[in-house]
Amino acid sequence: QVQLVESGGGLVQAGGSLRLSCVASGTIFSINYMNWYRQAPGKQRELVAGITRGGTTNYLDSVKGRFTISRDNAKNTVYLQMNNLKPEDTDVYYCRVGVASPTRGDYWGQGTQVTVSS
Image (cartoon, rainbow, N blue to C red):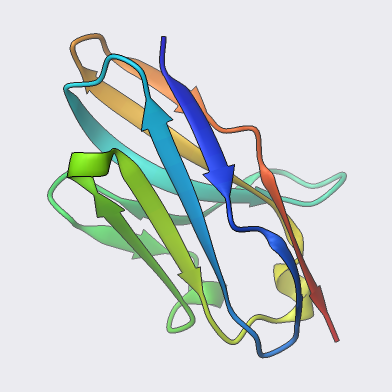
C-alpha cells in the first residue's frame, strides 16, 4: 500500500512564499507522474502543476512564472515552490502520484491548506 504525506502549507501574506512537499512511502520501485492539484470549497479540483518521470513539467496558466514543481526520485518526493503568492492562491493543495512499479496505482494525499492574506 502506498501512502502520501504532504507538508508545508500554512498562512502567508500576499507576495510571500511557501514550499509544499509530498512524500510517497510504501513498496515503490518507480513513479510516473507527480502532480499538485488545488481545490476551493464548492469548486472543481484543478491541476496546478505536474512533472513526469523524465522531468517534463506543465503548469496552470495563472501560476506560470511563480510556482516551480520539482521531484527527487531517490526520495519519492515532489515539491511545489510557490513564490509571489496571491490571495486567489488560497486553497487546499493535494498531491497525486502515479506509481509505475511494482504495482500500478494512482494515489492522492490528504491535502494541505494554503491561505494567502491580502
